[in-house]
Amino acid sequence: MTAMATTDLPTKTGWDFAEGAEIVPGRRAHRLLGGGWNCEAYVAFDDALHYPVVVKALRPGKVADPTALRGLRREAEILRSIAHPVIARLLGAELGGERPHLVLELVEGPRLSTLIRRFGPLALDQVAPLAAEIASALHYLHGRGLVHLDVKPKNVIMAAPPRLIDLSIARTVEYAARTDHPIGTDAYMAPEQCHPTGGVPMQPGSDVWGLGAALYEAVAGEPPFGRGSEDPDATPEERWPQLVRDPEPLPNDVPAALAGTVRACLERNPEDRPAAAAVAAALEPLLQRPRRLVLNRLRPR
Image (cartoon, rainbow, N blue to C red):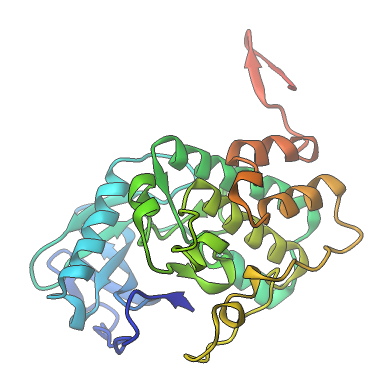
């Protein structure tokens, strides 16, 4: 469940585009991908690009909602300002009119969450490279003063390279530090995202926590703290067990470097978590690939 600033959650009514229906002139729906409270995403064909894309459109009931419009505009601004091979690209945006929407790169491949649900934990030799790729994207975002705040298996597309998607709740570090309500997806939220009035602000370390939770699930097949209560009367500790519980140990066959890195990412105190680049560095011995180009020769670091 994604935490919301309000207690009254809107009905998720959609556009219900049939295949071939015109979303806006020049962009035709192919199939629904999914969506959240504010937006829904379609695979579509863009006539100008002459290529399939993802159209992420505000839901009908959100078109006139200033908060939803502001969020879509913020996501467009962030995506326009970044360029990284592991982050799905923005190809265009229409932020007014009848159907405000973003046009995003279509990345072919299953979500990490889908693979785990269908086939169980990833093969261990896949996890370290995946971690290094996502950590590189987070390092890049953090270097530009941005935080993602929703790193989870559902937001990782297993392409080559993998892609980190959905910056709908991304913030500048300064804005995140001022956020005073829970935000994110419950099972992957750092303690400071669950309880932002507890004196510890949301920060780059919050993304490192999300990465650790996603990697734990990739290795163990389940989130590190289980799934909390969805009872609206639940206490914070019942809704977010990560506030009080430690993760179960990972299976014995997980390499120590990987298990130790995942555990370090899940430290409750963000100051005790490694930076994103340090996550990649810690896993480098497991990657078995050259890392540095020197004098036209590849030399392992």
